[in-house]
Length: 159
Image (cartoon, rainbow, N blue to C red):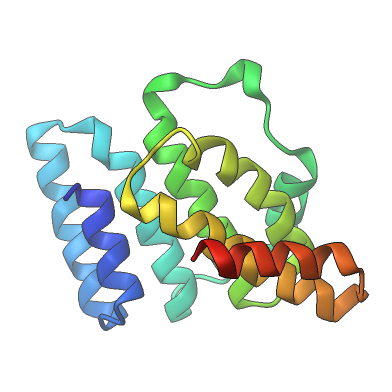
């Protein structure tokens, strides 16, 4: 189990957020000491997401909306940052769904799907249909468009 998977699984399993935040902060200190930079981007993304959920930091919705509208610039991607990018978009999709901002979540999901579809870890294999289904359910309630219902059914079948 990777560090990223451990932290996300602890989060989705319902671990109390404040101790999880402290654990991530401790891990970030160790990452700095040992210079394991491959995990720093992931840990920082999860830490920021948890702080937004706890209310330590207000969620910057205007920045989110602008980022979601821009989409993904695939030419400027750094392959060494793909794990951090996956967690970045996981956090954005999750927060957008949590706050019922389904249009924003739908835009971020396209970016998350780009990264997560290349990673066959259990977390991403589960997150793709889960997020897709939640977004489709929310968008179907908002718009009544039947293609969202079809997406929701496919997600349920996949899960």
